[in-house]
Length: 166
Image (cartoon, rainbow, N blue to C red; front, side, top):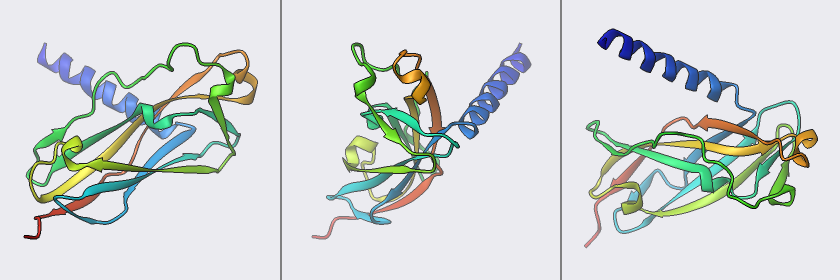
């Protein structure tokens, strides 16, 4: 029984990796500064890039479906990736709630966070990974409300949280 459970988990993880690798829109993150003082807020640049060969429409609030996972240097997971990954669009949206992203194009947002929002309660080195499960559409599917969902995860970024200066 345990072997079957491990196989199912491995299969699921491989499926997620394959889906993320095939996603038409990918997410990446980068800290504004690699070192943040404990009393300061962290600023993360979140970039969505259309890696497909065709334009895509993205739901106007892609940060709504962004999740951040945080891990301390000792391996402790401070903030885990919630499951399931798919965040459906909010009720009542229509084609006017999407914005255009050219093939190869990107859009960047700055996300300003208190360290406590990331589960960080002490100085140290932390790794952050972003997971995005957003609503997208091609031009031909936009008006018909036959929207797609994309899942992507970023490469991990490392941030050092320095002690407060007194």
